[in-house]
Length: 150
Image 1 (cartoon, rainbow, N blue to C red):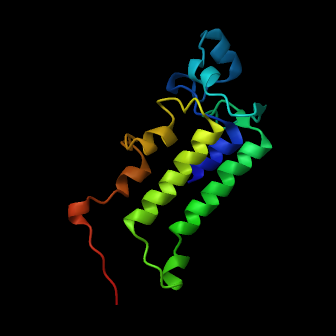
Image 2: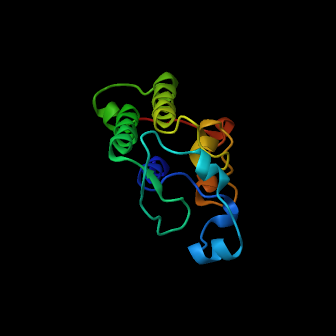
């Protein structure tokens, strides 16, 4: 859920052709973040530069930022390892509930939605392209998955 925290801190993802470029390069190439102009957080934004250059820096205001962060913490608690210690089985229904809570928080903060290339939106729509990433190596096909316990 680090991407949700990045969204809270630095706003939506920049278009792929603008990521990693300096402001001067963007100006020189006459690139424009059209989705960034449409995807404005509720209550306005606060500029918080993304040093990595992947997000547009138009972060939600403090109140909306807390909506995202609080929801992330609640979702983490639902699927936490501590559930096992408490004798609670994590079910697909619980995971779906956590995802629904995250979707709801994003809709509250970004009522216009997120850009189609934002990894959070892609994950919500089950379209995230993991090819070429470390995460792609960690995906286990359902047919190959096994659960062991002692």
